Amino acid sequence: MPEEPQRITAKEASAAAARAGNPAVRNGNSAARGKNPVARTGNYENPGADTAEAASGTKTLGTKSTARTRWQPSQMGYRWVGRNVSFLLFLTALAVIYIYNGHYADKISRDLNKTNKELKELQYEYKTLKSEVMFRSKESELAKAVEPFGLKELTRPPFVIIDSVRQ
Picture 1 (spheres, helix red, strand yellow):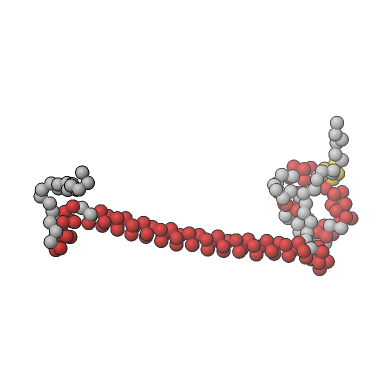
Picture 2: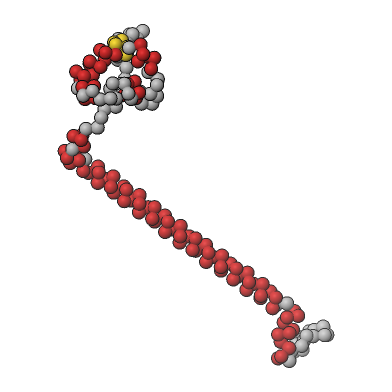
């Protein structure tokens, strides 16, 4: 059976925070004095969730703290950057590749659209020429086309010529 967490008053918790070096409590920050519900309750997801606990004046110890620490400039010092140069260069290379890939995809997309337009134009031209050839190959159109050469349409059925020497 799990142990009951130890309960302390809000006054004891603020005194412990001051001893631990919390600058907001030590310097008399307005967030620590209760004007900011997030800082007062320590719950960033739901600021009003701890109001019953805060009103009773007790706080549960042994649970995971949800309070965030203030960012200190020393956390991102030159030493940290120096230790992580290779990783930062890797991230920069990934960013450059990502941007290049986007531009390349745009270029391919434009080329594909251009090729599709050319294909449609060629299909329209093919269909136009095909219909023109079909129209000119009709019997009546052929008769009109060869009339200036003196050729006329046959009115009698054709007859077969037989080679008499081969018989």
